[in-house]
Image 1 (cartoon, rainbow, N blue to C red):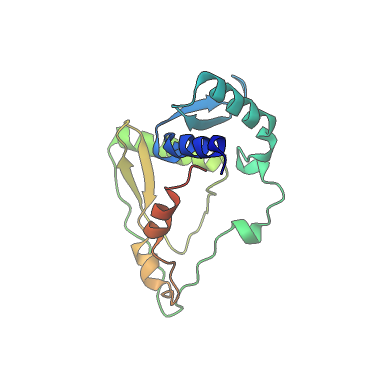
Image 2 (tube, one colour; image 1 turned 90 degrees about the horizontal axis):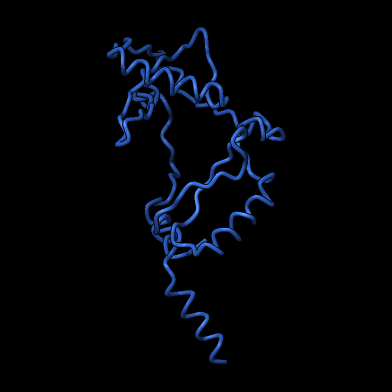
Length: 175
């Protein structure tokens, strides 16, 4: 094997792995139309500019919002959960939150409704409470307590393989 190829392979393997390093946010749009993505902080300035220009060139292939995914069928996107018909629907007792937490929850839910990730249902047969989880940066992650619904769902006889093993196997690759 030629020496040049061996050196290039060694240089490539010794470079910091981008999926294991810190990233920085780059806006591919403008100030009015923000399209943020993350790139490796260890890129040289020329690599950073080259990579950013490449992403800007192909920015139309990314879905920046739900509205960008016009060709998706609702049969693929919408989720339906089978439930055991012998289980009665459960409406959890409404939890009360402090006023400042309620504002943070409302802000996060409003953001998801505007992005069309959530939709408002007037008369639900199942009602599950929101469980707010504080992040380190002071924002709130909105989770939902689906314990009652999980009890009524049939158990999967063919679960996914150990997902943590699959993720760990991917960390060795740069892209």
